[in-house]
Image (cartoon, rainbow, N blue to C red; front, side, top):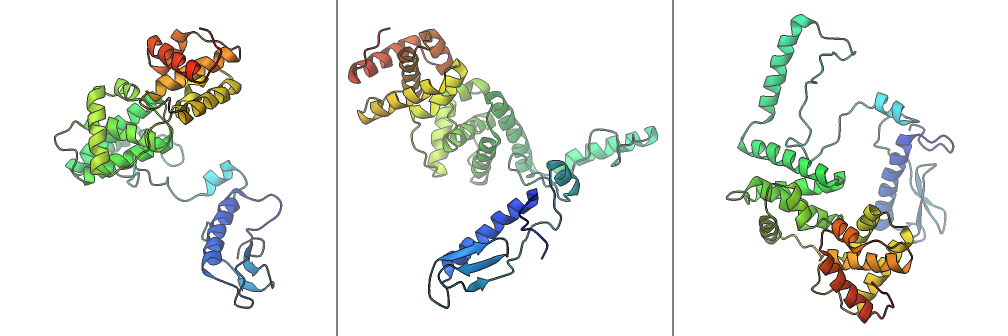
Length: 330
């Protein structure tokens, strides 16, 4: 076995190797007992690549195989140079990123410029490469839809995990033939909204409709259709999910965020959030917390960030202060 259990200067790749070994050991711990004493307390010794009984010290398994690469890297630069594999599979590209690409720059593998006499040939190769990557109507649909999804996600500032989840939802809709009769933009927007709810990165229907080319009504209708047909079960959005984003955009401190979350928790216990929009409740709680802690913001500022009206904030504000008996004045 290669040396992958060093104490000092542990390379990057060995960290992932240790995680793989932990998975192997956890499987052993779940399935096996000590054949000597029957104890279920098994310990993984990662320095010696062994599984040991904690009661009698019997070595149950040894020479655990590391399925990782045979090279080691001590920084990311070494890792990039020594790796011999491509990028991981991604659902945000219609071919999952498995096909080859001819670089748009006229340089060879060593960074040297391609001779001028060969550039016309490279241009033709790129053109045919683009054509053969999209072989049928389904891939053409995916290519357009996923590029639209990437555009909407970029405008909303969503992380990579949400884009992957939205791509999976859209692919499921294509496989179940749910796209026919509906606009691609509407299904993309609904998939993005479902992924935001699933990944706890809440965005309102208004925000989704604003960056897409469809109305809020169509996004909501398509979302309900997808959740019903694909059997997607998502819990209702909580006002707490919106507090960190609104507070960050308003420049409020962490103490104000904590106080707003505390106010929302008390309101949920008394059922004051039932039937109310989560964004309005979150905005009102943040406004109350900012007033209590001396970081007061105007109702207009809070309303603009939350995407609600000042009247909504005042109504939620009055309900919360009266029911929770908070001595706060406008």
